[in-house]
Amino acid sequence: MTTRTKRIVSALYILLFGMTLFSIFFEQTGVTFFSVVQLGVLSYFYFDFLSQNTHHSSPTKEQDIIHRSTQPHFRIIQILLFLLIGIDYLFFRQTDLLLVSAFSISIAVPAIIRYVRLRKNNHLKEENDV
Image 1 (cartoon, one colour):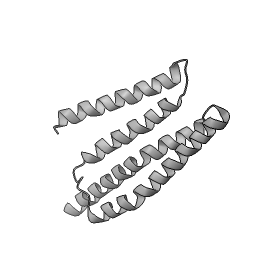
Image 2: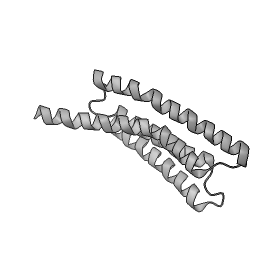
Image 3: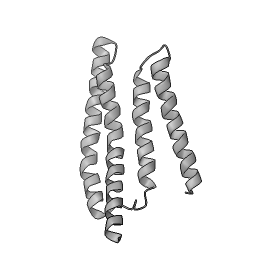
Image 4: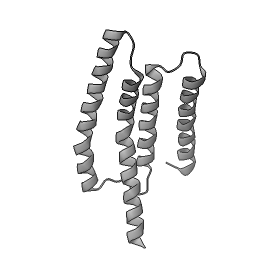
């Protein structure tokens, strides 16, 4: 992927993220379940896109083991939070914003962790090359 294409895709992600934040704060509907989850999904895809485009994006054996060991834990947390949101909706006919925010964060965190680890690994490799 060329640098120009990366910049265009990054700009589109930031535009979508900004439009979602604008709709949350300035529209009359306020914060909804879908808008908060949309922020989490957009964050996940954005950091996943960034981690695929780092200089040393090929995972090492250690990173692959760490990724495989943490991924099931995040999936379990996501499923439990989604079930709690469903139970909350069944009993109270509305969803708690804190539960929805936690669910959205649990969607985005694995990609953010992967991106930070790849960036850290990239900096370590650059220091060792010097």
